[in-house]
Image (tube, rainbow, N blue to C red; front, side, top):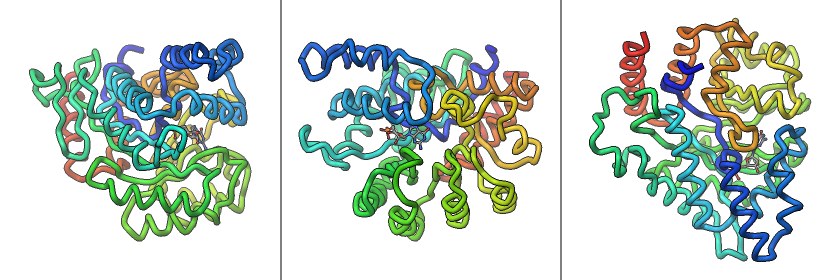
Length: 361
Ligand code: 5GP
């Protein structure tokens, strides 16, 4: 559906390393194979496999991390991911990533995030707004900011970062990530995410860091309800995060609470279906939340790992739930209310959508 590509879109749930291009992953794996660091033939079929259950997905991430974790590669992946989202007419991207310490590469959590920021600054195929600090790329200066989309990719993209806490991390490491996010607030970091294998780690381990973040005014989004865990799901909703991701395994009582609290849900259809968390699109909770007018945002999760794009998610929702062009446009536009960036950015995005609305009709 071409119109899903041409309309402006907002992406709020995209993991950096999950959004890596297959071609880049294969190239990097081949290089490591040639250096003898890994056996390429062993990993090639793992990379090319397209359907993975949830636990297999986390094994895939471990592999990706072995292949990608040095500063130069982190910067390269970031640049490519932003270019891909911009080419898909994403006008605002909240990219999330887990700051990683890797002593063998002299990498600290801070230097990891600096490499990500370096990658963002190196984008030159589109104008990038990172924290109000406007970076004009080689092809961008001739375009007016009016009408950010032309049907062949956005001309300007706002990029903001969420720093993720991985559920394998300790309470101290989680706190370090929050402190780093505070330090980098003026450099494009707008919030905190809790992610990682939902069968690992305890909510109470991360709670002090998350409470600290909240006290400092950092917005928080939580991966919530990817597996049945009623105690944790309830505690997460009680925490009042600004948004949650997935919300697949809630019980009736939690749905009621979620709706009463009006916590926006980041919906990742393809991810949920491919990991078999939800059997198929037609039984996805999107339908109920949409009918109830509950705040929700369509997102990709990991467009590399799940071979998807935000346009493909819009096309899937449109066909699975019988929603037309106008409803899908309104859904994309509504996401402006749930971004973690400033009011100034919200106002700019509203103008972008208003202008696109005129052109699309
Ligand atoms: P990174 O943080 O390394 O840039 O992105 C990959 C990481 O994001 C994974 O290691 C994992 O912690 C997290 N992640 C990606 N997809 C999912 C998902 O569907 N659910 C959860 N809980 N975590 C995810």
